[in-house]
Length: 519
Ligand code: MLC
Ligand code: AMP
Image (cartoon, rainbow, N blue to C red; front, side, top):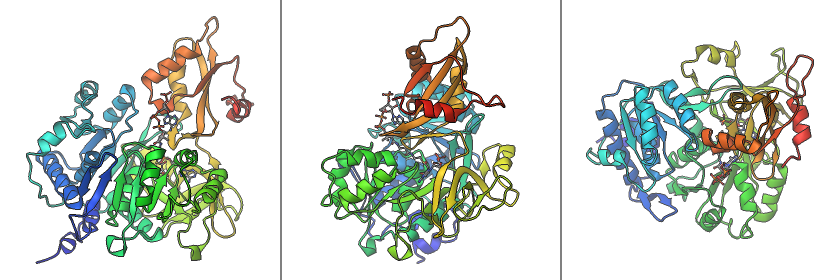
């Protein structure tokens, strides 16, 4: 009888590769949760089969999007796997998004299926049905909801739907410096190539090699928690300790049972604030990985002192998954704090000047990338896609950096006007657009300033219309009611005028200097 691996080998569906990597012992624990639930590999297989059968029974057109805004749970992970295995396109949405934001994403992506929490069903389903979505299911973190009820009627056997590596697997929305959010279209091949390359360079250990155990403490609606962490564990048949929410005390409690941890810099800052962080608690750990935002050298050094481990920093983005990594294997070089390491095998990175010529080593320029990990383009935005690629096919990341003489890359800034706060991206243009539409606001500028916990946070500067008095507290309340909470600037000041250059452009660098110590 042909083996499972042989049967699936010629299927480009990412789930096929993940499933083939499940360990031989399907009754071993695949996921353990913070409330002591244990899911075996067989559970993941059967539950994703049931959900995939449900999705397939809906008779959806090929390429249908499944938009999901639910709290983190193992069932949400199973929904992701089921969407892949049924051959549809997964569209994860941050749980902080409010109705205007969800209205845009659903209107733009036109998903055939929307899954939301039971609590939000009223307003989300209204938006979805208005946009033409036929099926709205619920899924709540306490393992209830119509999705699970309906799926329970289906078989737990399912043949993985065939997909080519160039077919879409996911759309991740990422905002732009101007205009609305863009959906980055990632293929099965993009995601699989990245998972395989990270397996190799981070030397993940399969069950047969003693097995890695990952503490999964990140949200699962962005590249870091959804792809890097989940694919990393699954493609190695490694167990995950699944935390519904990041809590430094729980991470420390679980650390002795784990070997790998991944976090945005804020997670490391918060762990360092715990007196219980010491070499003993981290003695079974093999690897600490950081990314999504710049890791301060102070954090990198403090981690070494407190745990004896050197954090491995890597760099990526929604459009490309992971691009670079510091070396895991010391024979390839040390992990250099303040750098994001070398381009991953198969990924080409160049640093260009404003005339599109490569800058010499050590000089700063625009980071551009080419490789099997680079996305297919922005959903229904061919012109925007064309703008973001060079004529010879490199994607323009919007990050600014340099190579050193040993080939390490350092990111020194961004040409895109973007604030990265606690690992979440906040686009000033979006917040300014909202503020400028408020009554009494003449104009506004949103800037990022350094913050000890979130790395960077937003500050809003407002100019009132003549004869109007603006109340910053009311403005903050209005933003909180309408925007995802992490986007709301931590402070709001009403000032007389914005500094401008001779071209009339607001000088955000001047404002940043002025307000750097604002909090
Ligand atoms: C929460 N708050 C934030 C915030 N997170 N403010 C600014 N920036 C953030 N990131 C605010 C809320 O608005 C709220 O304020 C208050 O903090 C408490 O909210 P909370 O939800 O209880 O916060 P907490 O659980 O402490 O969350 C902090 C966090 C979280 C760091 C754990 O932000 C997080 O999980 N970040 C990880 C993001 C991530 O996964 N990024 C990967 C992107 S992928 P108020 O005023 O409303 O009470 C990517 C590519 C790559 O970039 O390379 O990986
Ligand atoms: P996103 O679009 O949410 O995926 O965010 C991607 C952006 O996060 C990148 O373009 C970088 O600006 C930033 N980023 C990711 N990893 C790092 C890192 N290690 N250091 C600095 N910036 C990073």
